Image (cartoon, rainbow, N blue to C red; front, side):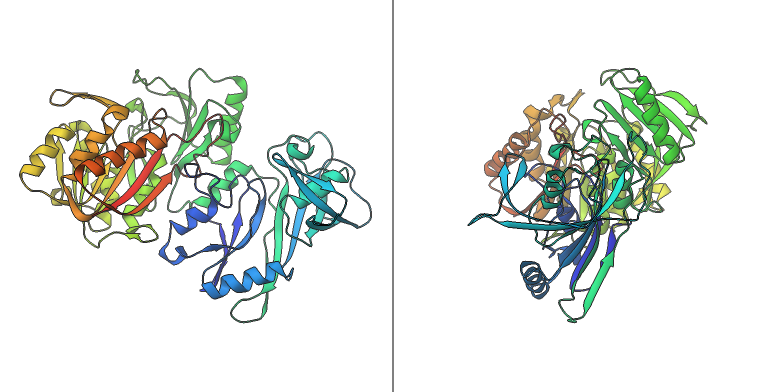
Length: 525
């Protein structure tokens, strides 16, 4: 993970990739960098936002870690004592001599407009000069020029507005008239300020990586390849490929789409394969009712079982399994939370909890919890998946005999466990959208999630945790949380702490493809 540039007990400096918001733009949107950090490590739980970078802008961003550091850094920004240097690319003629722009910025919808200075107007001031840096951008028609920009004030979009207002809009910044490109080519490459504790000047730099694929850069910032080699590389519309999804599964790539690949999609898949040194590439047509195995496209054929790493754990995957290969990658961060025993600020696990994984599938959650010292009961409607889960236990040096594996319907077993007075510290509820069993009949997540939650609450230790989750796109977050709230009210259980966590950053959301995954951690009295 190449995200952290510097950290001490007072501040953290990160190199934000393009395409990731500084903070979440809405309650149920994906996590921004700020939320992702705070919910990842206990030492980052008190991070504070001091300044922001646009979602489209990459580069250095500073967070405070203590109240004293926050005050000092905020004061320095307000007094313009923080010096920032940006680099931008443009394919239009840039000023040959240094340029200093001073104007008032006025908001107009999503954009800001540059206006002459006037009484009461906020002043925005930026200096520009040609850079001697050279960048080659694949796919650009015209030659690009690098320009250094130094914002002397801290107004939103000011570099973008001032560059466009002087006829050299940033490459990729279509909002301000720039030529369409793979990203907005603006990078915060340098920052200098006074250290809030030592009083000494400090400076940090991060060279711009404009030649790489921004989607790949985002994934590289998130994950240490020595610990994790399974993630989503392309997630539909948010990554510019509506209807196409590409996953790295260890040494192999799996592309998924609703129809045969187009020529352009094949080229995208091939590019991902080259960038990730994939040994073999497969494609699967997404048909939920049909368990069709993926088709081989190129490279070597996959063995019956392939091993992937996730947060240092190993999991066995099988590409011929139909709808899923054996691990839902969008739950990676929630499995990490079990593994590290840190959910979010003010939500930490006990040291040796009793865990019930109610829809265990291949026991990914169970393995993570057991590796952290939990005694785990894995419940699933499929004996085959439970056997697969035991294989995952063995791969991680865990003895399956020290844990329970139960085959059967969740509702029926909840009743049996309640009669036996089996109580759990953590319950994981991540059911399929639809299922059918002889004992329980038909389960539909939108209709039956509340009843499932009520049944689970009868097995939860006071002060225990529930991870409630659904990947049903049609089950809106408000309705999902409402179903949970009604169950809590009916059961007369009170929420002590709550943390809603959307899908991870390698599953980015888009207005044409909103977030489908909903997860909420609840500590319940």
